[in-house]
Each structure stands twice: as C-alpha cells, then as structure tokens.
Image 1 (tube, helix red, strand yellow):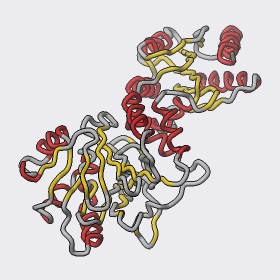
Image 2 (cartoon, rainbow, N blue to C red):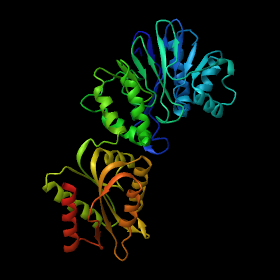
Image 3 (cartoon, rainbow, N blue to C red):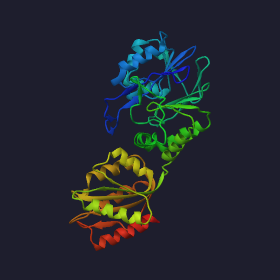
Image 4 (tube, one colour):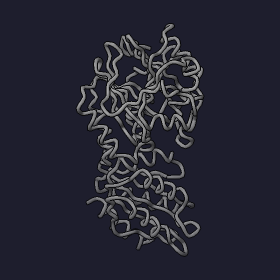
Amino acid sequence: MHITDSIVYIGVNDHDIDLFEGQYDVDGISYNSYVILDEKTAVFDTADQRMTGAWISNLTNALEGRTPDYIVISHMEPDHSASLDAFFHNFPDTKAVGNAKTFQMADQFFPGLIPEGQRITVKENEELSLGSHTLVFCMAPMVHWPEVMVTYEKAEQVLFSADAFGRFGALPEQKGKPDILAEYKDGSWDAEARRYYLNIVGKYGAQAQGLLKKASALEIKRILPLHGPALSGDLSHYINCYQLWSSYTAEKQGVLIAFAGVYGHTAAAADALAEKLREKGVEVLVLDLARTDPAEALAQAFVYDRLVAAATTYDAGIYPTMEEFLIHLKGKAYQNRRVGIIENGTWAPMSGKLMKAYFEGMKNIELLEPMVTIKSALNEESEAALSSLADALSK
C-alpha cells in the first residue's frame, strides 16, 4: 500500500495474538514497517517472528526487484526486530542504520548478524540522503527502550515515530491487507491508543515529553508509528492526547471507584459512594477489578482526576486484584491525583493501611479523609463516613 508516491507500507496484521507482551489483552496487533523508494532505498523496521514470512513477502513485492540500500532500526524490541535475521539472509549487503545502543542490543539478540562494515551509527540530528528524501534522526530514549530513535523525513514532512503514537488492535483490512490509512473518527483512536501508551510507555512521561518538544520544532504532515494507523490531517488531537498522558494530567474531572471484594459488601459500599457523588453532580465510573481488564482499569485511573480504592482485607493483606491494580499504578508512575480509601474486614481490617502505604510511595498524591472502614457490611457509622468521604471528593 502506497502512503505517498515514494513511501510504501509493508507491515502485517497479527490476528492470532491474544496477549501483547504476554500480558495485555488485544484484538490483534499490527507490526508496521515501511519502505522509501528513491535513488537509494530505505526500509524502516521489520516484524515479529510470528509474521516473518508475510513481512518478507510484502517487502519483496514493494521492492520490485530492487535491493535495499539501508534498513533503519528504530527499535530493537523483538516485535519490530525479530525478522532482522531473515532480512539479512535475503539482503546480506544492506547497511543497517542505528545508534550505538541499537547495535549493542542487536549483538545481544543476533550475535554476528550485522558486520561492522555495514553499520551506520547515527547521533542526534544527523542526516542521511536517499536522493530527494533526507532522513533526520532524533533520539527518543526510554520511549520506551533506551535505544529508541525516531526519524523525520524532510521532503514529505513525515515522522517515523517508533512506538510513540502507537495503538493496540489490528488494522482494518482491504482485500486481506492491512489498511494503515484507515481513519479513526470521533475519538475512536483514543481508547486503544490510551491503553497502549499508559501501559507500555506510561512510566516514562518525562521522556515522552522530551520527544514532544523535539517534534514541536518540526513541520509534520503525517505520523507513521510502529503499531496502529498512520496519523494525518489535523494532528493536534493526537499530540494533545500525548501531552495529557505524558504529563500525568487528568482528561476528566470525576471519580473512578475501583473495588475488589468477595461477597458483595465492598461492592455495595462502592455503589453507595457512587450514588452520593452523583447526587452532588460528580461524574463517576465504578469498576469491579475482578471483571475489568487490568490494562483498562489502569488507563481509566489516569483518565479521572480522583480515585477511590475500595478493597476487602484478605489473608491479612490486600485483596489480590486490588494489589495487582496498585502495583500497576505504581509501576506506571501514577501521580497528581486525589485519592480516597475504603477498607473492609470482619475481624482485623488491614487493607486500608496497606493501600495507603502504596499511595504514599507515589508522587503528588493527596490522600483524603476519612479513610472509611467497613466491618463486614455497611452500617450507620460507615454510611456516615462514606458521606464525609463523598464531601471531600466533591470539593
């Protein structure tokens, strides 16, 4: 598929994968790869080993008998680099373009694959001419591996953005081929892009901010990520989403109530608090962590500016689905939020104290009072405490 007259999409859809990185539920995924056809020819990245055959076929068809001069390695993560060995088996004389960390990792994954004489090691803002197209390389460390770099093509004002601006999900297809130019209208890009960013890149907001700063100095007409659709037209929506997500700024004023419990009493407390908040005009989303995709629960925690964690005490600790949620929040640098806590326990409530310790280890978290303690089931005293917490949350 031609993206422009000179830029050809050679990526593949993986419809069989159910867990991305072994943990994130996905409805397929695209492994995006590109070729620029000019006086010299440059390939951008490969594909996961699951799809090597299909990717090599797409590449061969796009080249129409030509031999690529360069392969640009934006990111060494195996979903984008695993087919490098197949590439060099077919095109052994091609020169590889990467940075010093790229080749360090390449030697770890593929010892001896890329000869020293075929390596072009680039640094920040170095350029490579293909003829009428000029590539400018920008380092993007920790978005989301330390070797990541993005490439700006000056003539057509295209940013090859590596994992930045990526999205979960296979691409729509035309005649059995991924349609990277398919448009996602009315915010339909956002949900899976948010879930992708916050779970894959989320810990590295400062680094993503650094990349956004570099991108702001460029005239960009199109963004070509390594997963998901090409972005074009008015790019401000996508850039604004990344600005919010990477600065840990809430998208909505409202409260996410995430609960985890056994017999329904903690769920009843979550619902009772939600009703009190709605009566005060506060937007509320209630999630049962046992029945919500953990990656989506994490994403929604970042959407709202307030959070309530409600959990039963279990084995003198935190109910497991809540603890998993808190581990994920901490790992993805959850911050800049107001948080309330509800604990439940029949003989020795402990979950509140332990949840509080998690949040105290996060940046710029305001813990609201009161922490509500339920002993088995709601009663007059704990109902009053819920009302007080609703007051604090609604301010």
